[in-house]
Image (cartoon, rainbow, N blue to C red; front, top):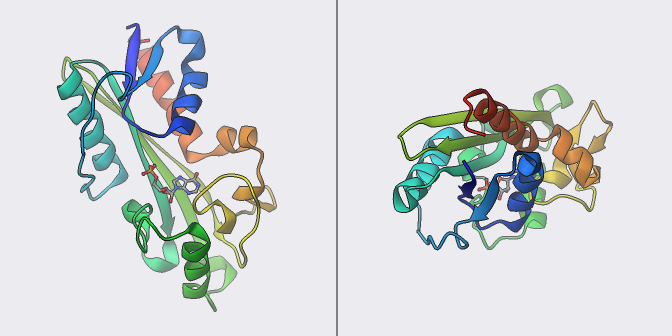
Length: 199
Ligand code: IMP
């Protein structure tokens, strides 16, 4: 295989997957570069379902190999919310300062041991011959008590990593890629595609 479409409009995600697949010689192109535009309803109940919907839709439109991902934050004390609704939680136009403050407020009084949470990322590859591969990974941590750190994005400033003694938004981009749900799922998918002799 000499090229694969990554079903995302996010430049940072494209950069990350290009780095991970660099030595394979496979060219990773965005949907725009492949001339595909589609409004895809992400109405699945799980991260994996949503990633499968995206990868299959773009594969059917392009007849090429397609990678996709779907991710979000699961908070145990909120029964797994915001989960698959992470991007839409409180509205897509609401700033993460406001969303993060609202989550801290909801968890006021919740003791340390019940503040467990995880970032989840499902990566899917859909091939034109109908084969579908999936790889899901997590980054486990806790919801902290304050908003801290300038790196990362989204919910990183309230996500505390006990193992590292810091918030996710305090990690360097390199360290975050090494331990994050997305980095691990993308590298896991690379391993699957190598094993299947697709890469
Ligand atoms: P998507 O997979 O690009 O749709 O991302 C879903 C949403 O989950 C993002 O908009 C963020 O709110 C949240 N999210 C996913 N991964 C991360 C992360 O690494 N840090 C912070 N927030 C994240």
